[in-house]
Length: 188
Ligand code: NYM
Image 1 (cartoon, helix red, strand yellow):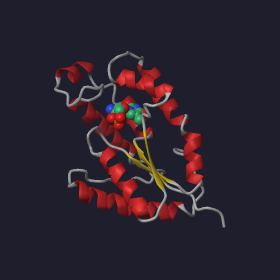
Image 2 (tube, helix red, strand yellow):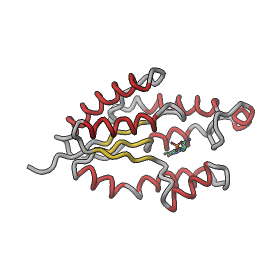
Image 3 (cartoon, rainbow, N blue to C red):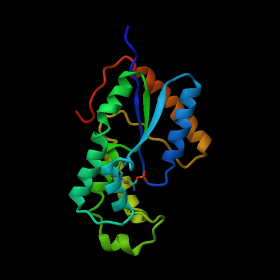
C-alpha cells in the first residue's frame, strides 16, 4: 500500500480573526500527535510575485484591480506543484488563506471607496478598514454555501484554546477522511 496522502486544511476569515495563531497551534498539535504537517500562507511574500503583492498591500505601489487579483492567483499557482508533492508524500498542509480570500477580497472591492476612506482603519495595509472587512465577511458567507467545498464555520470570538480545540478535532477528522481519497481540484 502506498503512502496515505495528507489533507489540505485552509483557514479563511477576515483580517485579525486569529488565523495565523490558529494555524501555528494546529501544526504543532498535529506534529505532537505524530502526524506530518506543515504551515503555508498566502500571499507568500517571499517570492518575486509575492514581493509585488506586498508592496501593493503596504501602499508603496499602485496596481490595477484585475492585475493585483491575478498576481494573488499566480502567487498560489506557483506553489501548487510543491503543495501536490507534499500532499502525495503524506504531509498535511495547514494554509493561512487560500483562493477563498482571493474571491472574497477582490469581489468586496465594489464597496463604495469614499465610505471606506471615511471610516477608521485598524491597520496600515490596504483593505484594513471595518467597512471593507464587513463586505469581505459577506462574501465569505456567500462562498461557504458552495457544497463542493467542505467548509466548517468556527466561532472565533472565543478563547484561543477553545478555538484551537475545535479546529484540531475537525482537522484530525479531515485528515482521516482525506487519507482514503484521491487529491482533487478546487471548484471542479
Ligand atoms: N488577500 C489575500 C487578497 O486580497 N487576495 C488574496 O488572494 C489573498 C490570499 O491580502 N488583507 C489579502 C487579505 C489580507 C492581505 O494577507 C494580506 P495577510 O494574511 O494579512 O498576510
